[in-house]
Length: 267
Image 1 (cartoon, rainbow, N blue to C red):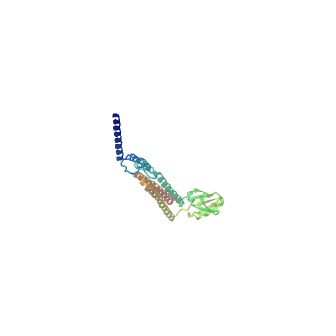
Image 2: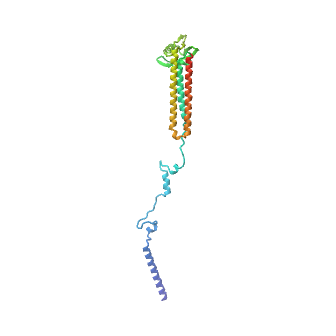
Image 3: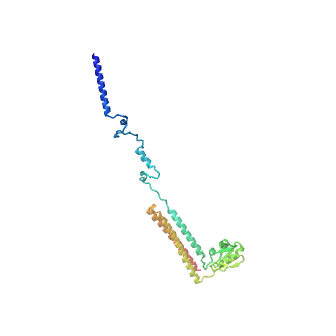
């Protein structure tokens, strides 16, 4: 009898425990939704897993966007190095100024003085066989004495064409046939002719100096355009070198013209 009473008490205790547990479960939502819901997630809403990339991966991916620089690139301190334009500027200016001096030399050679010079006929163009050819391509010009030129044609058949071209030139020469060559005497210059030749020399000097100064200005403009990418000291150095180059060639032109004027007046 006592055993039956103990079993009955145990059964009542078990039933009471189950009832209390059921009440606790109902008061607290332990459904699968609440178990997997993150903190502060609203009740009654389905929770979804966040499969998006972490912040640090998204940030790194932005850094590789096409055409977009990251902050690290701008703060890296790297600066584009400007090319050294100095040698190119000076070489170009020198070439242009040398060409101006060469042109002046050719022009001065054409001016007749009272002395014979082999180059004084180089500018003469000869028409032979229907073709115009420089005299220097058809004959060898040499100096017999300070007052006489000798013109020796490579082809004797062109001697008449050579004579005609020399007479037609503004040099005022009247060559004579001597065998298969031409001999031209250089007449003395008159006072009027000397003055006219000196004016031509002065004009030639001004023309070549203007050409040299234009080359200088082009060089300075090139330096000025690149000035924003060059240190100030470098810009000043290049400008100074261009100015020195200009003075050098201007002086060369002046010396050539003075020498020619002296040759004209003392002939």
